[in-house]
Length: 344
Image 1 (tube, rainbow, N blue to C red):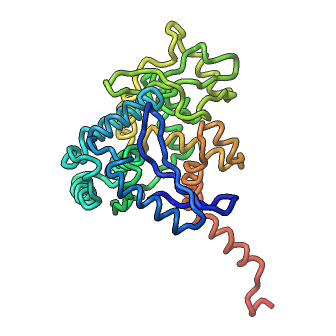
Image 2: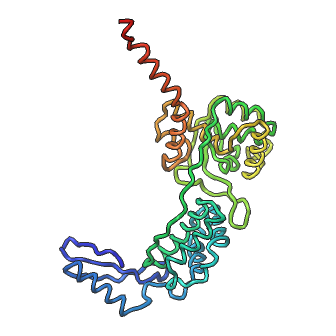
Image 3: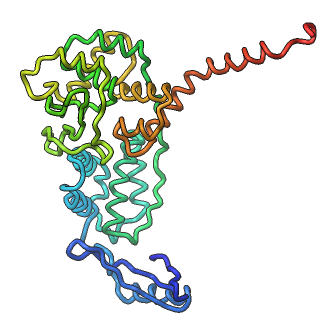
């Protein structure tokens, strides 16, 4: 049941969702002088109008398909691909059930089943799609699913020695270019692959697009991950010098695909005995800004982040790795300043 809200007049109102028509959500309004009265009126109407506001003939699978289709021109192609994969791979034993017959127990059972063979993150993402779909097509359904506990993965933040080792060990020009762009500017691999020489004007580079896989497994260009993803950055001299040394016989800075960057980088660091992902080079860039005391808002702008979540994670990691050094500094202070009794 929708929540009763007290109006400025002193009356109470409930807006009951009754369905989506021509793409717009419709509601039936109930108003009464007391909360109990308006709740009674709304409940009575529901009893007298069974099925209103419920997608009685729509199965969960059809509802998810409709949810994805209605957002196909709004969301990122990579997000649509992930949604379609989740629709195809998970919760198959309840996809045939009409929404008005779907039970919480059925959802919990299938979540438990999927959790046996898939990571908590995968199950949670699939359940997130289910939750969003139910909110759209069955808002009366109250989800109370117990989801698998998140696994906290250790974040890897390379230091300057690791970065230099990786950069100078790279022999493939495209990979080497990707590495220095990620390390010096904190760019994502999808942003790097979309860069062209036209994006570079003097000492500045503009990031305004990315290359991702769509649901048909084809590489397509799209806008950055968020509004904050569009940005213009001043490049350090070392990067400018490096880019000036490259051949400009093609429009794009590099010719390899995002997945190729991941594969080649993985092979490189494995041969060096280094534990590091390509994405961790963004963590390296963030850690440098944190060490230099760059304000969070400016660091977020440079990295193209809408929220400081990644910065906080990197900050916590950097602080934990320096904990021993900080402890030693503190103890040394007291060891020097406070004299033992025998020296008094």
